[in-house]
Length: 403
Image 1 (spheres, rainbow, N blue to C red):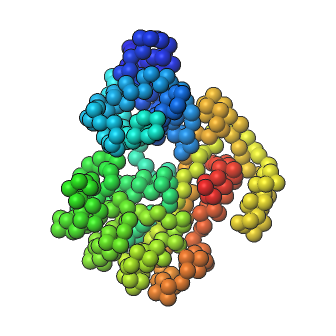
Image 2: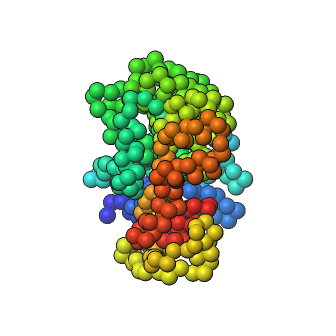
């Protein structure tokens, strides 16, 4: 086996002759093989702790000697074209790992000075040939039709909401790929650009040059776009420009950090956008989370514990009696009982009744109740359905919904 293809354990077994170049490459490659999205390299008072985020959960993988801490950070800086002589400033970069016969692994790097020295977090950006669809993301047939009707309109706003790491960007990228034809011009403003999409104009924000979401969005409107994607609506200025863009004949896709779909509409009002503008432009809101999928190799039926039943009873009208499932843990899933993730979602269509409630400045709870009455399946109900199908467990669903 060539040195660059060695595992982390094989590189470390070389003792005093450990190659830092091989070690960093092995860490990235091993993270890729186990399906990790991030590598955390954190110095402590006694060691260098390496963790990998697999299916949204951090797992401790290695404890390395502190004596090689500075060399590992320096190697990552060299790969990312960062300053190796700067140790007290935040630095962000990017590099690509290549190997014979394997897919390139793009890595986004963040280095921050901490009490015990610089740490590094590496985000793996692997654009696989697999083309996501709304179905593979976990949307039901009914919700898929709601989304498709909204994005087929030439104007309006479609928003994806949820906490960090809930799959919002993946959902928007999937929609962009579906809408990406030679007849339309698609322009995005992102922070950062995670994946390159052919025939789409993608702009990355640059704080140093004053290129923010708001200033970038103003410039995009002069680029004659049909469809605009804004990575995130963070402030009043961006929200106002986005709403006006949707009002003037553009389809605008974006994300917001809210706990559920219904809370998104009052959130825009809190940002200072007039209620009639929100009611006139927002056509659909997708609330979502990502839950771990039960490993199919070790899945088995499971009876709810009394605590789980009580937790469900607190949010539902009685706990369901249906059989559920759990992963026992095996070699395939590295003993976790889970392998991969699937979306849990709710799709709120902004119809006449929701618009009226918005104009009357009703609460998010009232809007949620109206949406459910009009056919929206709440996120928790959607998750319970997937748990009944054996896709995820009740414990994982409750952990994700209440974290």
